[in-house]
Image (cartoon, rainbow, N blue to C red; front, side):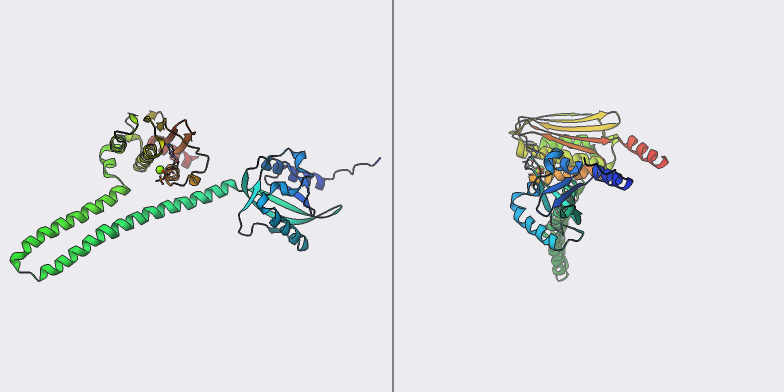
Length: 354
Ligand SMILES: Nc1ncnc2c1ncn2[C@@H]1O[C@H](COP(=O)(O)OP(=O)(O)OP(=O)(O)O)[C@@H](O)[C@H]1O
Ligand SMILES: [Mg+2]
């Protein structure tokens, strides 16, 4: 009878690190068979632990990349040094259910009783990839906004000012009695410039928001944006303006604008409900339709538009919670929860003292 060698402290430590590691650890023989796998790797790839050990590594690699991957393994066997595998590439792995996810992999050489092997540390970077894509989307949104403003300034303001400048030059050459008529023309041109500039500014901070508050602005937006052939609209709104600061009011208004536009453009809904509720320490806003719905997943950027991403970005800016619930055929519900000003201040103060 062979006796199991006793486990020393170093072995125990190694086993504990292997078992508790937050990253997947796979030890793979050079023939491409998984020889050891820690519990995290089984969980990450969606296998029962015993099914993973002894199975070919190919199972975890998307079919299209397997040949290339075997080439890497052969290359690694020739130059076995510790190194990251990604080298600037986005690597994909495949779960038991066939879904793919992005990973980062570091390789290091190892030796098993029966020959050389490779230790692969695998990290699921789904969240990091999502944040990267979101960051890129945010940048794109900001860039679009800048382009829109630049376009307006170029096409309208700059053109008109150039015309005014030319008119002033011509005016210098006129007889004094002709000047009066010219002044009228100039006044109306400058008036148009001012109007254009205020239109651009309105796109940034709608003046009605300051003047009449967010609830009334939402009411007006709804009646302007939803036409006769649109869904039946109901608005229930508590007077919440005093509970929100300027940024929160702007964010709330922009989110309602986008959510309502989405309903009008995409939902083919028969009813649209907007509720702005004074909910104790928070202001809760819900925009709900009974239209065609969609599959929001967790990756708004995959849907192609900028609206939902912008909503999420704006909500994050003021520390609000945004959720978008939708299912094909079951309508869409956008919910925003904002901390009231007094609670926000209190929270900040508490934060300072704690
Ligand atoms: N209320 C809704 N009902 C049905 N589908 C919706 C609704 N809201 C969003 N969607 C779907 O989600 C997609 C993404 O919406 P998002 O607002 O991000 O982009 P968009 O409206 O297509 O374009 P943009 O807002 O950039 O002009 C839409 O194209 C649409 O398919
Ligand atoms: Mg949209």
